Image (cartoon, rainbow, N blue to C red; front, side, top):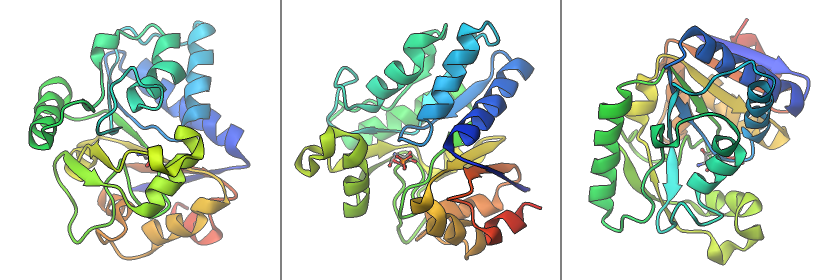
Length: 251
Ligand code: GLP
């Protein structure tokens, strides 16, 4: 079932996303959460930190795994996704960092890196209780780019030009040449295994792709469209990103 939640703006959407994740932790303190990077979830992470500081949340038994990591970047690199997670969330709450997983960007052997992450996900997670997602401008989830088939397992992906450009905004001070051209990403199979999926989309730039993903055909050329087949999806966004047509789906 798809639930569409359309908030007035980014701040309200961020608070609503944090409320949902917090509810999951309250319901099951030792829950498993799939996490995403990008600019979209930053506000939700800040709100989770606020809830923790206010004594409303306990992360001590939570396990997390992230969708993706740039190939070639160590977790200490300030543009890596491990660093992003530490600085936006993990360093500010009482999570056990040994229970937070991110693909190993410095493993040069791509086959090994992907196999290792899939084994880790099977062993430590099994299936997420909730998976947080953003959506790329071309419909990618994690770093699963448009392709002629949905990729089931963790893969090493060659990033699309649009993705490199979009991410240069947030990473590498806009310097295109410095953005890594490859990344490791959790496959769509593991994302779909999650019991619940929370996908966030905010801002006018996401409006068309959100409509394509949720109102168009299910196709690997719009990877997020596969979420139409998942039994429990919350699409949470703001008025700029969620068109009337998309809003009508969730009513
Ligand atoms: C990157 C991440 C995705 C994220 C996407 C959108 O490609 N790998 O997980 O959803 O960016 O980013 P933003 O939220 O900045 O628009």
